[in-house]
Amino acid sequence: MLGAMLLLTFTTLVSCEDANDWKTDSAYDRLFMPSGLSISVGATEAELSWKSTPGTQYYIIELSTDSLYGLKSDYSANSQILGEDGSIKSSPYQIEDLSNSTKYFVRIKGCADNVASSNWAYLQNIFFETKSENILNPITDADKGKDYITLTWQPGLAVTKVTSQESIGTTESGAPLYAEPVVIDLTDEDKADGTITISGLKESTAYLISIYNNTTLRGSQLVMTDIGMPEAEYTVTLGPGETLTQELIDSWVDKKNVLVVFTPGETYDISGKEAEDGTLSTLNIPTDMSITLYAEDEGERPVLNIMKDIVFKGTHQFFRAYNLLFNDSNSGYVINQESAMYVTEFLFSNCEFNGFTNSIIRFKGSAAKTVGNIKFDRCSFNNICTGSYALVHLNSNAYTASNIELNDCTLNGVGNDVLRLTNALVTTVSFNYCTLYNAIGSGRYLVDAGSSNSGPAITITNTLFGKSTNAKGYRGYAPTVNNSYVLTDGVFASNAIKGITTYDADSDTVFEDPAIGDFTIIDTNFPSGVGATRWYPQ
Image (cartoon, rainbow, N blue to C red):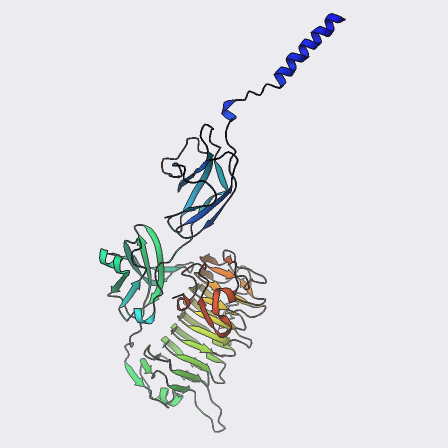
């Protein structure tokens, strides 16, 4: 018994010594890994934050455009190593000189003398992407003419070239389509001055202007050159106090292409024939006659009081309007088409529409009506469609339109749908560089094609959705969305448009004074190059 007890005691002592042997494998003798990684990202910089770890003297950050996750070697061959000199002592750390619109991978480890470094710590999402930037200053009317555009930016920034691309239409899906870029290399003088003029451009033409540092895009703007007076077979200039009437139009018999010139700052009445009782009929454009309504883009726009809606008889090449302000004077519509018609193009450029209770363009009745392109370029719409109709209202399979575009437009108060295309045969729709505020009526749609599996291909690009009340997104095929944002007071009640990024601020924070129609962007953190260009910060 005594021998057995002695053996047990000896065995216990040996076991206790083994259990309390504090020798460790040196492979695991290292610092704790940094935790709680987060990153705040700008266009060319990012701030990395983390929780400090005990015993750590400094940190090393590895940055790369190649994936770093699970990398076995110390560093990637294409990486940028920050802090090897022991300079990064604590969180946070500002990473500078990044390329905008670029995906980066990042990881961090803790280091100290005579202790093994920690394992690498990664962001939860493994990578981050820098924001787009736009170093180009807004292009004002003073910066462009009929055949040139002048660009300016902060002198001394790292840039090497600019490009210009003529807008030539849209793709089959409705996305903007541009010609091959014309490249202009910047001289040392251009860079030092922060300016260059692109000349030899076409008048009344949209161009996508971009500036680069080698292959890195640093800014872009969509700009339209000024509108020169269009050529026409027959030109009529209306002086102050004159009116555009049916009798005047009928006097242009056999004229195929008529240009009507208005004087800036003057007011004109637009009306059809007046009956004995004082009532007005519609203003009829005779078949085969194409009409351009035009004013020089200087001073105040001429005011056109639309006293009765405009209709078209038969076939026409175009109806175009430049630099005009349209007021609803008891008409309710600009175009209200019932009879059969074929028009290659409806174009409104740099025009303003105020107070139209019903619609800007409406087709009605059972007769077949076809239009090639409906385009609104640099237009603004204020407090319209408070009745039963949409801004563009085509709601029958008897109506056909190849393409509907709103480019660089401001929609401020639309009481109904923006586009109602129920059963209409419309191929493509696009919203490019638009700003919307209270621009979809309660319970109405941005685009309503009638059902979820019908309608045009819709593209929304560089567009900003501000405040709305109980608005809906779309009814039709899902839109393709590129670089577009909705503010916190612009939430869609239903049929939300997927792909639009929510920006964490409301209209009163982002805009100068939206209540009075001033949508100048005052939020310095809001992404550049989004919304109607007239509202870009100076």
